[in-house]
Length: 594
Image (cartoon, helix red, strand yellow):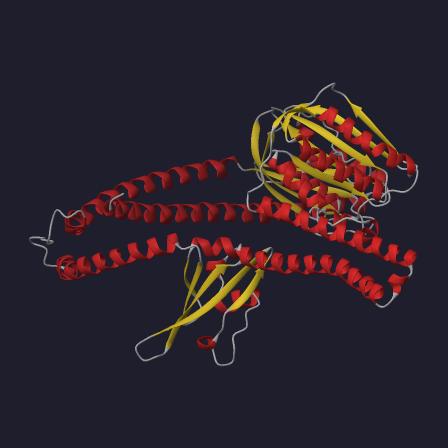
């Protein structure tokens, strides 16, 4: 929308608002004055009827029944004689259901006022006034009324005995109000029309040069003009055009330089994998890249000053200032982030801000922790059998070898520990092949059900000696998958051996084969000692044992399930464990169909 029409709209809107405000105020003042006058007049005549008619009749009556008899016959004619034309009065009983005391027959609709709110207020002992009520009069014609009701206390000062209800016609007032409203509406329309014409007339010369300047600036922006020229513009608009011409040369140069630098900076920032936070001298953020937001995973980074975000990240600023801050490592959930700090200074050497560079070192930390843990675990696993071998060998050298029985026993222990070391080294070499992608599988189509039957048969004798049972259930006769049978047999053998090893006498091991869409599922369930919930997610880690003392006592390297997971993943499958302590464990193997 052009500025010309904005000026016109503003001018017309101001006139409209003023006219509406004045008209509303006038109408409200007229109505309020009429209502106050009607209230005062009705209240005055209600008091007059109470003093000169009701109170006079009550004084002359022998009792309340005599009063009601007198007033029923005399109230209406007396009220009609005293009241001005257009005003009605009625007396209503307060005891029991409200009803008028007059007994003269009246047209239908006469008693509609008994349900009015003013009557209800008067019955409660309060005088009330109401306006703009429309209902039929005594002749059946609908009119608007001003209403007033006054409580009458004759026998008690707490509860009214009667209510005087007054009303006067408001038709003339509302008719006059409508006439006034029409006059104000017509005057407002005329004022708006005149205001529109005047606004258009005065805005045209004012906006002519502005429109010309706007056209020149648009041409300048798209490169169609090199200088803004406004002939005849000798006012402030002409001065503004000259200022644009002076500024344009500097602006072109600065924009070109800033564009080049901005493009370079955006390319650098966008391609950086490290996060960058740049703060000014007041500690307010002036720049951050997308990598920073991903690393910190924090909301409102742009709104947080440097001190606040340092507090969230648990970074302390030394007393010497940010210029002497050293690199720190931040832990954010499962991420480890290295933060380095560089203060940028002006020509005088004063610090103008700080640039924080964030580097994700999670992978390095994890690899380092895995390396340390692996070395510690391997050292521990090899040290135990080596210590046993050395101690038994020293004992033999010290003379125990002269006893044939003791010598054979010690040599048996040394042989078993050597086998254990050999098993550990074999499993380590196998895992190393998996890690280096040098493990080759000999895939061929094979039946998982047949493999399970053969494997479980080999464990049957061991299970029987321990008082345990192994049962195979299969809902399919065959479950053909592409597999390296020897490797899958190794997986099953490891799981079944664990089930036998970590279960009590009388335990049951159930193996079930099911077909599920694109997969064959093998469930190996035992009712053994189970695995604690906090250890369940770690059982596939290398050298991890739930009960380390019991595991070493029963044998095993702690690498079997790690190898089983590598084998299943090498087959495109999956191994999963679920367990409840003291109830049992279920190992699930998923094989994709060929």
